[in-house]
Image 1: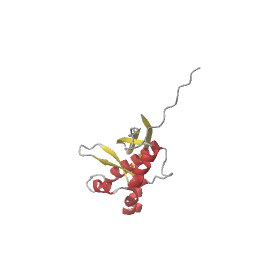
Image 2: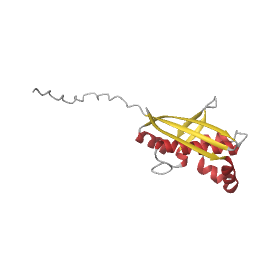
Image 3: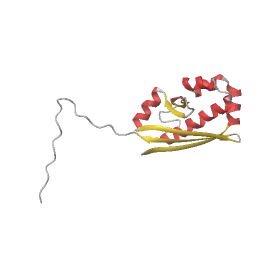
Image 4: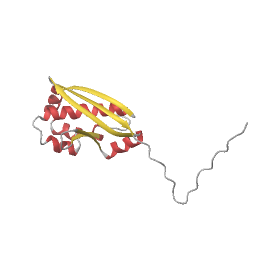
Length: 148
């Protein structure tokens, strides 16, 4: 079952101006360590950062928290797997919030065209874990059926 859907659109030129104005400080506040590693290997850093920013926005919109209510911009991130597929990752605090809200897997798609970046996030509801009785615990008493 879907927990939430989020979308964000961003002009790459805005990120380019912000990166020029704030430099590494902006990147330190925005990116998780794994994202910084991937940024170091990219040929188009402004595009990479814009896609990460838009994806983070889309994810917190899908969570229903925005960048408030316990989520910060570095509590969620996007890293590419070895095939290039973007995957949602969380900081320790973000992971705690994800579990608290009952969010399971996250899916993100990213695209860009004519200086715009679009991110769409779909978060799935976590699957309930079956309750396993503890050793030595007694089962709850059954309710007796009433006869009319």
